[in-house]
Image (cartoon, rainbow, N blue to C red; front, top):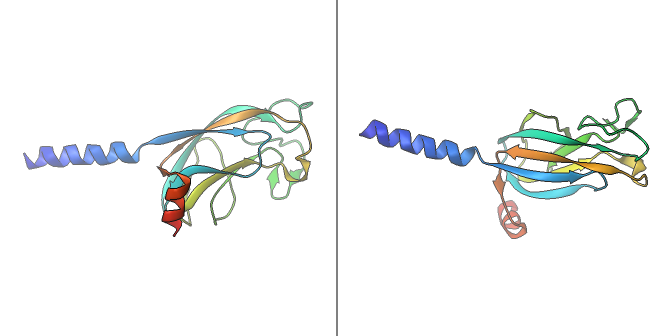
Length: 144
């Protein structure tokens, strides 16, 4: 009986920790905070689908961005960038497992650098496993 109870509890914990949230990242957006809280030391996983272009005259690309164009800062134009508030920027790729060095909300954006004036199109769908959905008020309380 004890084994059965332990198994039920273990399964419940796994199901809770395996939740996933899906967010849309638009090609034209700037830096955007998403309603997902990530604890310091927590590992989050990413699944990325879709395509976009940072100039509507160019062919669409995936989350890697326009790799045939020069880098804009440390990243390619149109590369999908993430960070946890207060932490460093990182490149988001499909299948990435990222361990956060800080606690905060998830931030996602396309690297547009000083090319934000160009007409863009498309979006990426980003599914994040891990973290905890939060409202703005909850995030303020957690960062407290």
